[in-house]
Image (cartoon, rainbow over all chains, first blue to last red; front, side):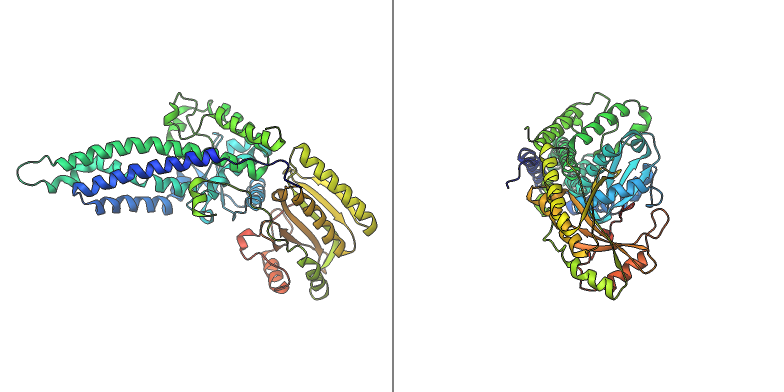
Length: 300
Length: 190
């Protein structure tokens, strides 16, 4: 018997994501060429940025958890959450991540860690109170898909050269200072590098935000696949977003750093230009999820 | 997952691995004879029931088949939904072999309908000499078994006993090699 209903393919999303990464690569090649051409000690810059990236990948989880006021919990402390994640891990064929809970009323959840084996998923007490079990399951499946897709690793690597460009813009004079010949202090290639870096930084910023949005769609889709209940996640998103706007702003700003890996970005209630957003607008995410539900029901 | 899948964030549900469910038929004899673990006469299969017409009709058909064959073999079929929204098809039969066959009927029906990825696991319940429950859980996605021994009290498992069981059963069962995938199942109703 042929499979009657299933989730269709997401070729469009795949193409857009691949194209965005291709553009990012292109922009970075321009930066590298400018870097080599300028005579700046590129190795030194790469070393600093590389060191930071490695630190980010290997050392920042504990810091991030602490910044969020989150704490790893044992199965005895959070039996329901653990049992839910256990089942989702079986369905998603993932090893069990560490489970953490942040004691804050802000309804949110996020995932950390460079690989599935070192991952941590965290839910706030606010989200656990706000959502029904099926909705929470959708949200945790979304976070587990981030883990399975290695989104932290991908985004850290994708931002590697953007970080380099940012350093050059900020501290460029330090690297370029010693290379000027003769009396002329204006090293033309240094100026070119500076301008290129600004360009790279700006362009890659928008590309990275786009990439982050695509990966959100992808995580929503993954969550729908794992749970088989796209509408539960859609309902969770509606509920979280109406909950988010009630939260005072100071709280949100303090947590801006981690925004890319949230289920729902803090401060989403503000009027942000779509280009600047790490997350797609809620309506679009819900529309994508309802398309999945229609595919599942065989009415698409 | 390949490199390209990571780059493009592609998610596909893992389909069940090649079935090694029937390894339990022979292993149960060893469990019974040498380890004094006797079948409790019950086994269950757990899956996510999708809320679609197509899925419901497959489940209804499957239940009918199961009850039909069960009448000949003397297998009783019950179904319950747990608090996580998963469905348990609980089979009761004193003949262990019939339990394995019954579980296979359910999983085969779901797989033939194209919903193999919705199966969470199968559970075989045993009792030791002190009448303590011992479970062997079959993970369909990986095609492996692992032991699960609740130690009494909330969220307590007897890991020592589980590890010993793994050693005792040896190669008779395909035991899950990664210990972090020995996922517990609390509140097993069998």
